[in-house]
Image 1: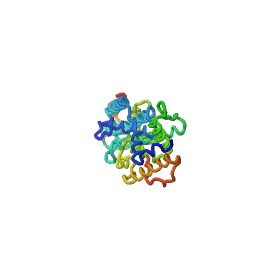
Image 2 (image 1 turned 60 degrees about the vertical axis):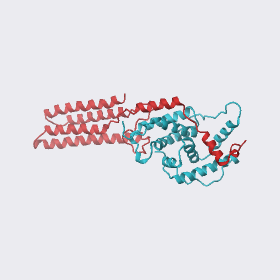
Image 3 (image 1 turned 90 degrees about the vertical axis):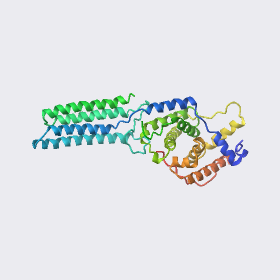
Image 4 (image 1 turned 180 degrees about the vertical axis):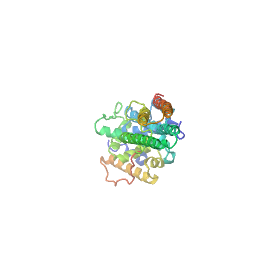
Length: 177
Length: 174
């Protein structure tokens, strides 16, 4: 029996039989998977790191605006260092997390959208981003309290912080779309 | 919505990917699972697609290659039962041909099996295969020719002909 199919058509026969082996997907499977792919297409890819940086920068600007004069120069420097340290800490933590989870298909570049490794069908990266954003803001808040800012600047900072935390919640909510 | 969404028309991509996967690991539930996993990853990383680096088909087949290799590796480790091809009913000529071809393909080196799967499973041209494998059409044609020769040798002699290694370099899937 061995060699049977090959002897029946030479090179062309082999190609024909190789083509004949091709299988088509079930239409139901194709339609169902296409529907899932399309439904996932509406998901927004929020630039959470941009949001985080914007929130921290905003807080910094508000604080700088509320602390005037030469007496505020030292405090401004302290606040800038606090923001930088928080940013560095968040970046470092994210870097470790991304390296450990980087089994994706983006060529090992890491970066946004690496996604979770579980098989629950959703992308917990959004939820994780939201949590990281919230954590970073809370850390910034704690650091802020250790500084001696004016009461007015403190009130404004709290207002901006509340708004930023709402934005963090929106990242979490996007995962439920 | 992404401006350069590679999954804008998923049906055609799904059919190509399924055919490629089925060619390499056999059709049915296993192929559907690997195809689904491929598109799950594709959805996750669709924002990283760059049209300057290839067509959506080449991009998604790159992901499919990686998923298929993972599935084959899992099989080798005994995690997944082999999908044994069963001849329907009596051993008719067509079924016998199919089984014989199946067996011969299984004996091919992975690079040859991948080339033939892309050519006959995904129904890609040499140029498209070159794009998916980050190679050149000429190298793909040579690789296909040698894969054919090796397959023919396996079928005719029941053993692998000592053909020189294919020059085409199989690039790791992105």
